[in-house]
Amino acid sequence: MNIAIVGATGNVGRKIIEVLEKKNFPINNLYLVASYKSAGKKLKFKEEEIVVDNLETFDFSKADITFFSAGGKISEKYVPIAAKQSMVIDNSSQFRMDPDVPLIVPQVNSKDLKNIKKNIISNPNCSTAQLVLVLKPLHDIFKIKRVVISTYQSTSGAGKAPMDELVEQTKLSLENKKIISKNYTKQIAFNAIPHIDVFVEDGYTKEEVKMIDETKKIIDKNIELTATCVRIPVMISHAESLNIEFEKEFNLKEIRQILDSAEGCKVIDERKDGGYITQVEAEGKNETFISRIRKDNSNKNTVNIWCVSDNLLRGAALNAVEIAEAYIKNK
Image 1 (tube, one colour):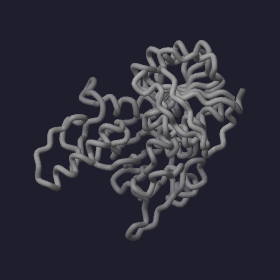
Image 2 (image 1 turned 30 degrees about the vertical axis):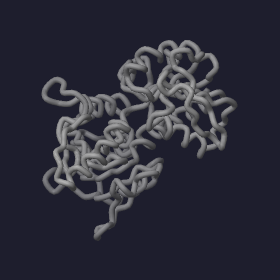
Image 3 (image 1 turned 90 degrees about the horizontal axis):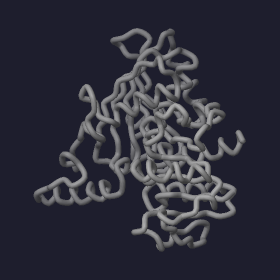
């Protein structure tokens, strides 16, 4: 197939290139596309150097599938143009809640690929992608009533500049120098910021609303969810603390077995020092890791879970490529 990647020079774009290469995805021609500022740069794919094309002049009819990873404004302008000539897999939030655009995590709802109406498939928010991998197999068995989510999200979820700023602020902090935040509302070094994306109605942030709305669309509109999303001084991987209330009774052995056999999930849950997965260990791994599985001792039929995943892989690039694989399979 002929493949194009818009936003190829960014964090996620580069990860998509890496995933395509590792999976040995069937590619005849690979087109790397970015803004005029990056046009002309060269990126490697399978030992070959590919010159980056200018988005403004790129001919989308060259590509069978086009990945978009360049942000909402670029997707808003260029995805409808590309979708007239190519199947688009979009990583932005622009089309996720469009009823005519399937929002896909292949291990969870690949059946929804039968309902493509606009030649656009949406990739969910990175924190949603790992969440639904955990919730769906449990929902199938015990039926989820409510989920309380607290996230611990890495700086890479905000882009390269925020990652660089974490390094810069850490150095300044250790040298006891003044810190002026550029990409954050507060200092990120040695801190936690309970604010990701803009504030919307009822005091929630857009990131929190995305998690709630997208999970309902992907799994079941009747699940009740509430979320608090926090940015922490970690480079890569998002962690989530989940409190999940079921309609049915369960035992912990069942929960562990269901999750460990679920595609894309891996349970590492030993009740000893270090018997769990942290964000540093999840980096570069494809799985969503599940630890700290225990009954909520304050509420009936409720379990507490800690899950961690590489947000650039599972939450973005890997999921996007797996969408392409599922789309090809379902054609």
